[in-house]
Amino acid sequence: MSAKKYSIVLAALLAANLAGAQEAPRPDAAKDKRMKWWREARFGMFIHWGVYSQWGGVYHGHNQARGGAEWIMNRCKIPVAEYQERAKSFNPTQYNPDAWVKMAKEAGMKYIVITAKHHDGFALFDSKASQWDITDATAYKKDLLKPLAEACKKYGVKLGFYYSQAQDWNNPGGSVGRKEMREGWPNPDSAKIDAYTKDHSGHWDPIQETKTFDQYIDDVSVPQVKELMSNYGDIAVLWWDTPTAMTDEAAIKLQDALKTQPNIITNDRLKRPNFPGDTKTPEQKIPSLAELDGKDWETCMTMNGSWGYKSWDNNWKSTETLIRNLVDIASKGGNYLLNIGPKEDGSLPHETIDRLQQISKWMKTNQEAIHATKASPLAPVQWGRVTRKDNGANTTLYFSVFEWPKDGKLTIPGLTNKVVSAKILGGKSVKTATAKDLVISLPATAPDAIATVIRVDLKGKVANANTESKGKMKSGELD
Picture 1 (cartoon, helix red, strand yellow):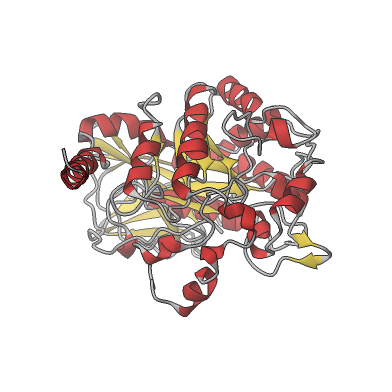
Picture 2: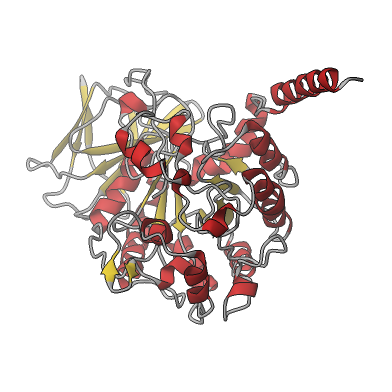
C-alpha cells in the first residue's frame, strides 16, 4: 500500500473511532440508577490541597495579585526548579483524614472530592507515572489518598477525585495556557485571553516544553487516572478540570481509563463539546431558574475567596450565607460542593471548622429538607425556599423560611392541596388554613434565625408552577 493510501485509510479509521468512542448517551434507566445517590446527596465537600498550600498566596513577601492560591505558580511565574525545591519540605504531619471525613459527615455532606492532582501537576498519591508526587518529592513520603479512602469507607461517605487532565505546570508537555477558551468558551477573541496566551500559550520555563502534549497525556495523565481508578476502592466521582488544549483523541484515552469504575460519575470538563459527562459545573454562582436546562448540575463554591489555602484571605462567607446557599441550590434541584482549603501542615483554618460545625448543628434538625429532595414545584416565594419529596400519590413540602412573617402568617400562593399534617422541624405542629392559598400560622419568633423549616404533608401531587427553562447554564473553570 502506498504511503498516500495508507494515510487515507488511517484517517478514515481514526474518524470512525472518534464517531464511536465519543461519549454516547447512556440509557436513561441505567443513568438514573447510577445517578441516584448523587441526586439524593445534595451536599458534598470539595478539598483543594497540595504543595501550593506552602506558599499561602505569598511569593517572596508579596501577596499573589489575582486568582486562587492554588494558581500561585502560574500567576507568579515561579520557575519549576524553585517550586519543586520548596516542595521538599512539604510535611503535613497534622493531616487527619478521619477527622475531615467525620466533620463532613456530621455537616450532612454525602461525598468528598479532593484534588488528587491540580494544575501544578503535584500528585497527592504514590504515582509510578511521575516522581512529582507526595512520596518522591516531599519530606512526608506517604500517600495522602489511601487514609482518606479508608476514612470515607468507615463513615459511609462517597469518595471522588479532582484531576487536572491537561493543564500541568511541572510535568513536561502539560498544557499551561488557556487555549480551551478558544474552543467552546465565551468571548473567544477577547484581548485578555490573547494577552495571556501569546507567550508559548502561557509557558514561562523552558523545561515545561521538553515534551509534547501527546507524550504528557500518554506518559502521565492516562497512567495516573488508571492508578486512581485501581488503587483506592470504589470511586464515586471523577471531577475533570480543565480541557486546556484537549483533543478528542486524548479525551477518549482518559475516558477509557475509567472503565474499571463503571458506576463513576463525571463532570463536563473533560473536553467540550463532545464529552459532556453527567453533571454541569456552575462555579462560584447559583444558577437562576431561567438558566436551568433540566440537566444534573452542581455548584462548586469557596468558603472565602480562594480554593487553596491563602493566608491573607479573610473574606469568609457567613454560616447564614452557606446554609441559605445550600437550601437555594436544593430548591432548584442541584448539588452544593463546598470547598475547604487545608494549610500546609494538614490542619484546617479555624473559620472552616467553625462553619462546618455550625452547618452540622443546623443539619441535625433540618437535613430531611435537603437530602433526597427534589426541586420546588411552586413559583418562587420571597420569604425563603421550598423543597419537596414525592411519597407515592402524596407530596411533602419543606418551607425553609429566611424572612419570618411579622404577622405570624406564612402564605403560600395557589397551593390548595389538602393538608395532612404540618410541623416545624425540631418543634411543634402548626395550624394551617386553605382557601385559594395555603396559610400557616407560626410562632411570633423564628426558632432558627438562619432558616426555620416547616414540613407540610399534603394529599395528592402538587402542580408544577415553574415554567420549563430554556436558557443555557454556563459552566466555569476553577481558578
